[in-house]
Amino acid sequence: MKSYENVKRAVFDRPWAIMPSKLDAIASALLLIIEGKPTAWEGERPEPFAATTYAASNTSDKIAVLSLYGVLMPRVSPMAEMSGATSTQRFRAAFREQMNDPAVKTIIIDVDSPGGSVFGMDELATEIRESAKRKNVVAIANEGLMASAAYNAVSGASEIVASPSSEVGSIGVLAVHYDFSRQADMQGVTPTVIQAGKFKAEGQPDFPLTDDALKHIQEDVDRYYEMFVKAVATGRGVSVSAVRNGFGEGRVVGAQEAVRLGMADRVATLDETIARFAGGGRPS
Image (cartoon, rainbow, N blue to C red; front, side):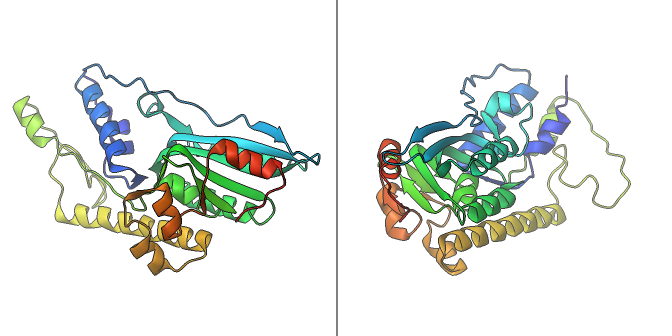
């Protein structure tokens, strides 16, 4: 039986800025694969690498719409087959292409994502925030989720829009550890780790989690949470305390509530947003 050790390490004990239900779905699918059982995963994997452009009504300016869908990861790995992953590095390349096009005056990021890996998120958030100083960069939660890492990424946009039925937030970081030791016992398997380096085998799924390992994972989670909160506070122009205590505290909220809390700027559909900017509109 394959051990899928690399895939285990990519999922378990790593900090994720993602909806807990989505991380649970990824972990459950991985556990089925490890056990050699079929999965029911049939999610689509739309890739946001081709912009749709629209012409402004009274000028030669263009509006570019880029999609940011699915589980966000820096590089799409075999996990993409089960999680609908989107490469944030490839998204950044597509985003830069539109930023470098002088005819494009507004970039609308069409978001439907539960979040994803913490890796690369601060870099993407910084790039979008800095780009919004040069062009209109509008992010819209489009009939879905703008959650966790996805919200982090676009928090510095010129404007955040939420469609009426969308949900926004999930500002937080989590990690999960699976202890397979009892399963190994039942199968008559005794794992042995030979290591060099005090903490080299820390968090191994074949053994119960030690107090030291738990402390280290918590420190990782706290570190990425601090980065997340600071990025959102900077992007939205509010205090870190306001984000910690007033932006849902890890929950997603509906569109109207997101506007009330300052997490979004207005409620509107994607079509309404495109039409507004095509007619010469400006960010809130």
